[in-house]
Length: 286
Image (cartoon, rainbow, N blue to C red; front, side, top):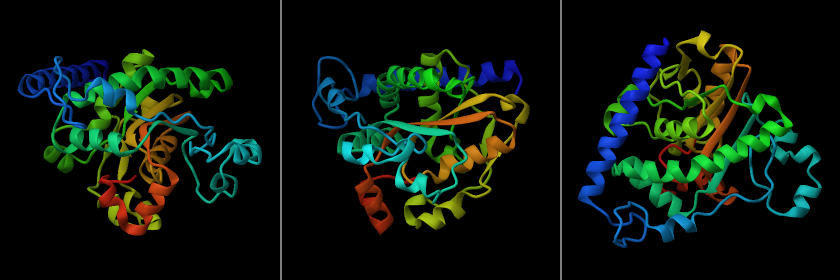
């Protein structure tokens, strides 16, 4: 990816985001969560924004799963969850973390953002998330230099789904992340080359098979020996981001850190595995 091409992609995303958000705010000013109409045109009112639940518990230092209580932390060797200690999963990323709990209010915001094309919600969520993400990255850098990202990448959509949705929510979140961190964002280095089934319809084993071989690093030289920050909206089983990390490691990335806006509780993931994901509202449950 040439610098000129990268700047062109960034310019297109920024122009699209500004125009779409401006038009939308003119047409509607009601909160997508509670329905309140305020004096200021915003898709999410201040009350709902302040009620988003932060993940403040201790988390597994690899997969980012929040520990249930302090007694569990005391008995977790090296701050690893049971699955990471038992090496049940082979994680290709070096560390993953999420900022908010995927509760009812966050669910309503993300669904309206992705499927009702309320583009300005991305500005609100990205604006809320970016400083918190930047602070988390700074804390990680104190203990591990590999956590200092050189480049930000969004999880890509397949071109067919991109045409249908008209935008990639991960790319919008990545734009805010790049600005907050002062790092470049590469929108077309990682591609989704196969249109996969919705993850919500699959078992955990099927999810892994579903995304296997679905991604390709189109510009290996761009990420070679770099620390990459991979951005997505939701982390559940981790199958999608793990496959992306696998491809990037094969292409020569020095490290891959996964950052997602939100993450469901362990109980929600259990319900998703039990076939209730669609009721919970996520389309991919990655």
